Length: 240
Image (tube, rainbow, N blue to C red):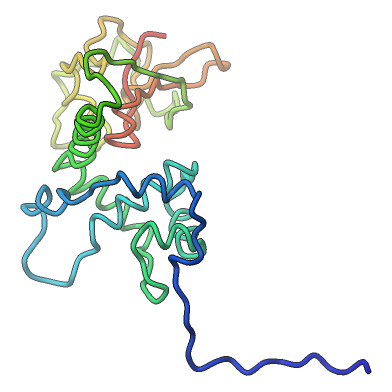
C-alpha cells in the first residue's frame, strides 16, 4: 500500500571511523605514508607567543595546503569548504568529525606572516628533497626548473614608466608589501631577479611582473617551481 514517507528518528549514538571510509588506493594515503611534518613546531617555536588563545596547529595548515596543491584547489576559502565536506581530506588533515576547520583568513595571516618570516615552506621543501635523496629517489646532483607564464595581478594604470622608476627614491617603510618583497630580492640571482633587462612599466601591486604581447599586452609573470612552493604568491621577474 502506498503510504507516507517514514522519517527515521536520529540515533543517539553513532559508530563511525574515518579510517574505514578512505579507500586504500586513495592518493592521500600514498602521500601520508611519506609525509613527515614533525619538525614544523620546532621550526616555528620562536614565532608563537606563550600567552593568549590557543593557536591553530601549523601542521594542520600545511596538510590542508598539500590537499590544495594535490587537487588543484587554488582558493583558500574553497579549500576550507572542501576539507569540511570531504572525508578523505578530513582524515589526511588529522581532523575528527567534531573538529572545526580553520577559517580561510588563517591561511592568509600565516602565509604572509609567520610562514614567510620563518621561511617554513622553504624548510619543508629542502627537508623533502633531502629525504628523497636519502631514500634513493633522486641523486641530488642535477636540478630541473619548470616555469610557466601566468596572468599577473597588475594593471598599467597603477604602474610607473621605466624612465620614472628610481629605486633610490623609494622608502621601503612606506612601500606596499609587494614592492618591499621585490626590493629585497633584486640581488637574488637564484630567483632570476638580477636581470639586466629593465621593464617598460613597473606595477605597484606586482613589481616583478612584466608586460608581454603574448596575450594582447597583459602583464604576465613567470613563476618558478621552488618559488611557487615557498610563497604561493610572489612572481619572479623574467625577460619576455
